Length: 141
Ligand code: THU
Image (cartoon, rainbow, N blue to C red; front, side, top):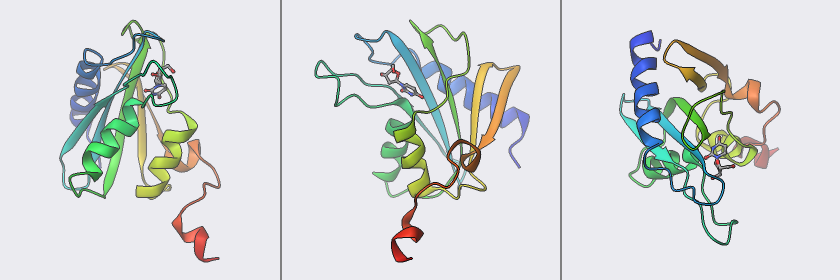
């Protein structure tokens, strides 16, 4: 059970990451806060590149920080973003990030929180945002 207090903590951390977003090309700043199953929070921001293709989303930055430290189990992620770092609307994860979530998370249980403010947070499971996702179990079928 993720309490409202914890959701707000995730929102605050994700929002703070907007300050570190490196987005000189799109000027669209994104911040993420990833909650691990042992209660730790890994943060991330988007990191763009002059060659465009190597750019990394905030969600994947958070996942890769955690996985690179041996953390592989996750409960939820909060994502916020907007033009020039101003949150105007929900910022749903891109398809590539949903697939990365699929690698490490149970799609029925992993929660994706999107927020316009601390008082306007919506919640989806990974399965809702990635129906019939391809995962490691499919390799053995
Ligand atoms: N972006 C993210 O970091 N996460 C999302 O959920 C959507 C898009 C980034 C990628 C790129 O740096 C910028 O936002 C505009 O697409």
